[in-house]
Image 1 (cartoon, rainbow, N blue to C red):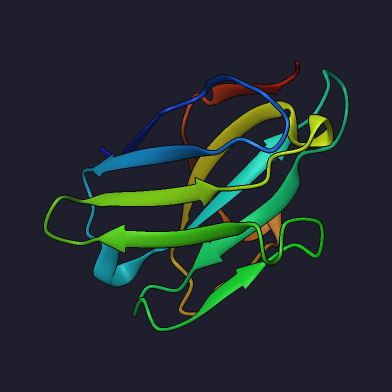
Image 2: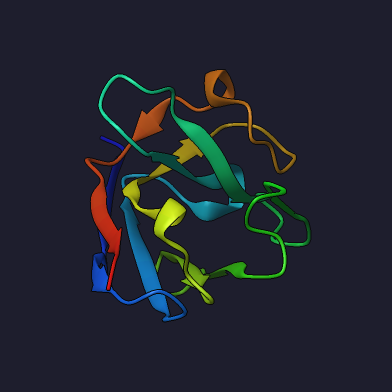
Length: 125
């Protein structure tokens, strides 16, 4: 059974950094693109933040995080990371990782079929 578990969220001051981790089980990263999404408020739509292709050679970022966030993965550890720098209050959200049986990096939510439970990130002074 496919499972994704996020960790690393917390409270950070504006301008600070956090690294989110996503541990996957029940499937291999060779056959799944892994994306990070966020929901900034209850009832608001989930926004695609970043994704790494199943080959690991391609990444994609939302315009709002380009130059500040970096996605990476460690196949041996079955981990996918989201390094977040220069955090802003508007980055406050619940962050989810998700898996897609899709060859390319994508930020289309409907491409993803397995989701984690989410981790809260709060950026505030």
